[in-house]
Length: 114
Image: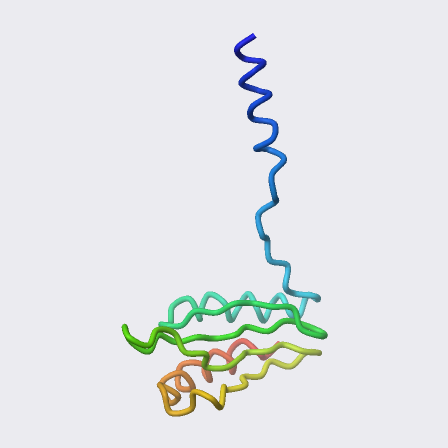
């Protein structure tokens, strides 16, 4: 009887909300580009969030500016219809812009060729 009560207590926990699994790529080509770019970004001092975009996906990049200011939005990497582009954020130009572009350009060159 105790086991039955224990199982009945666990059933609602098993039926809880599903974890947020990102399925942000829409084609095989987009997946290959994403699979190339994401691990390389993980090695840089940036963080990113991925969103669906028309015909592909978009990564919004942020860079850490320091303790009092926190994270700055530095732009987006977007895959759409077979093209990978980096769009810098004009609102934060001048804050680590050269460093971010220096690190991002080789990744895009390497990962956008297919």
